[in-house]
Length: 379
Image 1 (cartoon, helix red, strand yellow):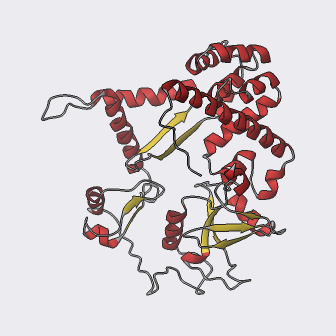
Image 2 (cartoon, helix red, strand yellow):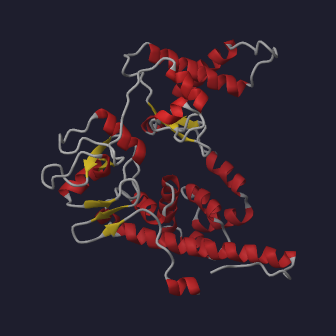
Image 3 (cartoon, helix red, strand yellow):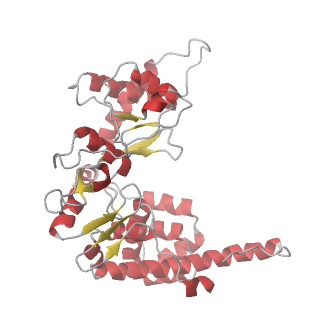
C-alpha cells in the first residue's frame, strides 16, 4: 500500500484531511484501550509471562514502557468515564488531552471533564492538574514511597539523561549541594567567562559523585568499558567502545580512560564464538559482561529490566547438555527466570538476533507488533 497526496489538493483539503485522519487515529486508539482494559480484566496477560498489562503491550506492540503505562492508566479511567471515552472515540479530544483529563477525575464530573477538554489546551489542562489543595498529613509518606532516580542514554548515544523524584525536603538537599559547588567553579581561563549555570551544576554533580566514589571500596568505584581491541589501537579501525549499560564512547575518550585502568583481554574462538563450552555451568565474569552488553536487559518480550537480572542457559547445562557459550546464554530478570523454569517456557533462536519464547501449551511470543492482515491492509 502506498499513499500520495493529490497534486490538486488545496490547503483547505489538506487541513481537513489532517483533522479527519487524526479523528480516525483517536477512534482506533479509544477502541484499542477499551480492548486492552477488557484483556487485563481477564488477567490474560499473566499467561504470557507479563507481570502487568503495560509489559504485555510493550511486547505485543513494540511501544515503550512509559507509553504503555500511560495507555493502561487512561484505559482504566475511561471505563469509569463513558462521556470522556465517547468524546475521545469521536475524535473531539486528543489522547494528550485525555491523559491529562483523567488526572482530574476526582475533582470533576465526567461531563465537566469533556467540557474542560473542549475549551482548554493541553498546557492549560496540565496547569489545572498541578493545582491542588495543600498536602494533608501522611501525603509526605506517599512522596517518599515513590522516590527514585533514573537515567538512560540519549538518542544520539553521546550522553546520559536522568532525573529524580524525591520528597521536597530531600530534593532541596540535593539541589542546594549541587548549587553550592556550582557557585565555586571558576571561569574559563582563556575567555574569562563562566559556563552557564546549568552546565556548572552538571559539573558539580559529577564532582560530588566522583569524590564519593573515591572514598568507597575499589570494586564499588569500578566503571566498566567494553572496547574492541582494533578500535582501541586505531580510531579508523572497525569496532567500538561503550560504557557498560551506557552509551558509546569516542576514541579520544577511550584513550583517556586507558591511561589508568585495569585491562581484561577476551579472545574469541576461531569460529568467532565465545565461551567455555562444557567445562563448567558457572559463567565466568568476563562472559557474563559480554552477554549483558549484548542484551541490554531481560530478553523476555515486554520486560527489558536491566537490573536484578541473571544469565540463563537456553539449553540447560545438565539436562540438555547445553554449553556455557555466548550463543546459549541470555539475560533474564529474576521473575522471568523462574517463569522459564517453573512455568516450563523455553527460549529458542539466536541470542544475537531474534528470539522466540514458547509456552508449555505452544503459545509463541516474540518482540514487536504484528503486521496488518492482508485483508485489512488492502482495505
